Amino acid sequence: MKLSELHLGMAVTHPQYGLGTVKAISEHAAEILFNDSRRPVDPEASHLVPAESHANLTALSLPLSQLIEQTVAAVADRLGLEKPESNVGELAPRWRGGRLVLHPHDPGLASKEIELEVFFHKIVMVRNNLRVLEQKINASETLTSAEKFDWQQYVTRCYGSLTTFNLLFKDKEAQF
Image (cartoon, rainbow, N blue to C red; front, side):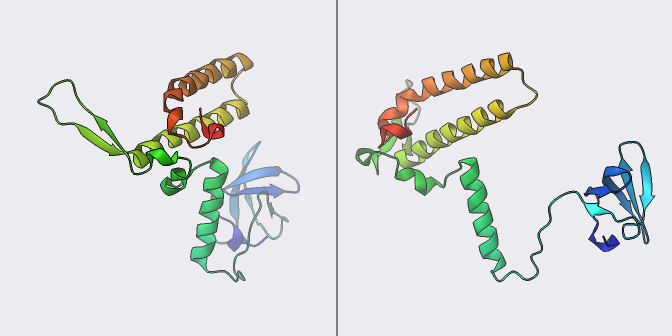
């Protein structure tokens, strides 16, 4: 591996010392922190290799903006995030174009109006964030089974509190 291919914080593997992290780079060597100590290493002479996957995008025949858009869309999809306009399809047709009006008890205070599409989007984002939270709780390696159960109960109660808004959804499968 060439010295120019290294960057600070990069995980590397050395044939003798094993897994390490690049901590400093000088003109001829890199200082790498291994489990037992910090050592100066010549990357080429020591047969150092990256311990992490790399992608070479130099010969990519795709505009960078398109690559970024596709990457962001894939990440958003994997995280369960949605664009506001994509939520409108889940809104029951009778509510489209509607408004939510909040009237305070004090007649001297002004009412607040919110487009139902905007309110619905916020409700759907709460649902999506609860789903992500659920996944993180279930995937956690640091929480005990009892702690996971407790946290899952909080999430379930949140879903239960949001069932009031089920009437806004077009499809029953999308409801809380």
